[in-house]
Amino acid sequence: MLKGKSVLLGISGGIAAYKSAYLCSMLVKAGCDVQVIMTENATNFVGPATFEALTGHRTLTDTFDRNHEFSTEHVSVADKTDLVIIAPATANVLAKFAHGIADDMLTTTVLACDCLKIAAPAMNTRMYENPVTSDNLKTLKAYGWDILEPASGRLACGDVGKGRMPEPDVLFDAVVQAVSSPKDMTGLNVLVSAGPTREALDPVRFITNHSSGKMGYAIAGAAATRGAHVTLVSGPVAITPPADADIVSVESAQEMYNAVTDRAGKNDIIIMAAAVADYTPLHYSDQKIKKSDSDYSLELARTKDILKALGEIKEKNQTLCGFAMETENVLENARKKLISKKADIIAANTANGENTGFKTDTNILTLITKDNETTLPLMTKEECAHRLLDAILELRR
Image: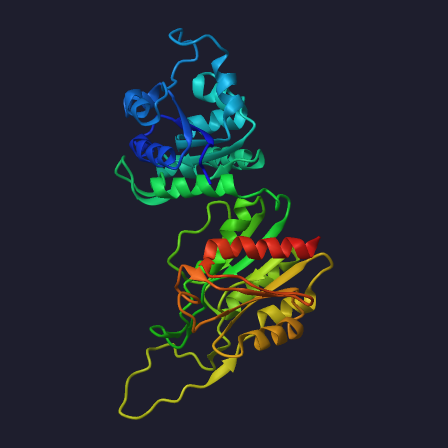
């Protein structure tokens, strides 16, 4: 996907600059023509010669460097660039990009670029959480920038919190998605549910299922990459959320019902990929239920049917997608679900297949609408997500 693409890798003055060498190497190996531009402060962390050896190009640092072929270089570089990625992106350089300040080679060149732009913020936690930085990030998003969520952990300053630049493989994946995905969902609001729910029995135990959330998170990430404003309502999972999604964390089926139905009216597309519990304990014990020598009988009550509720309140021009995870009669049960829930499309899959269903990185989906039925081949969940979004957009046309 990246072969022949021209990528501008901008490096500002943060300790994470050393990671940018690994990203640069990955991009070059993928067939990219990489031009590196460093701020003056960035050269204090990694030398320009490192990137020159990796890219085969002179690393640009000075707008007024006379030791090169004459051209208006910041414009000539911008003209041939397919994608810009700033990694690390310090608070200072983000502020400059947000307000159109062009006072060095990097900011001047980026201001002249009209291509896709990605920023990977990296800074102290308090700097990242400062309202000024938050406002600058919102401004950049409004201008079309993709902002990657910083990782949490121990920072170079010794603090622990959010502010670490994502690892090079995460940055590389972001570049791949940005280049390969059309921006055909710009202006659409998309709500995705993902993961399992947990139905508490007592303070220690709960009922749940094997859902990892991978399919729902892949859908949310794909929609965000294609330009949608995404709200991800997620049960408890161990996955890094998409950078551009608004995350709403829930535990129980009732919490997911409330979160989804409260937000339903504000969304153009709703995709219920979560594995919501069908039953919840009828009685909750405030204290741990003690083990005894006799059997224990657990009474269960039916949870609210979220997809059915959404079908009943669905608005005109709103598209509703449900998932059907089955172990038998997969297509028959999915077709029934399409009708009974008043959904527009059902994505059916099986929990019994090899490399499909819960916890796997791949899946086989059958997309069922009132008029069509399409079975996709085995593919990654990210690929499944894009094919599902393609089908939803086709329905909306």
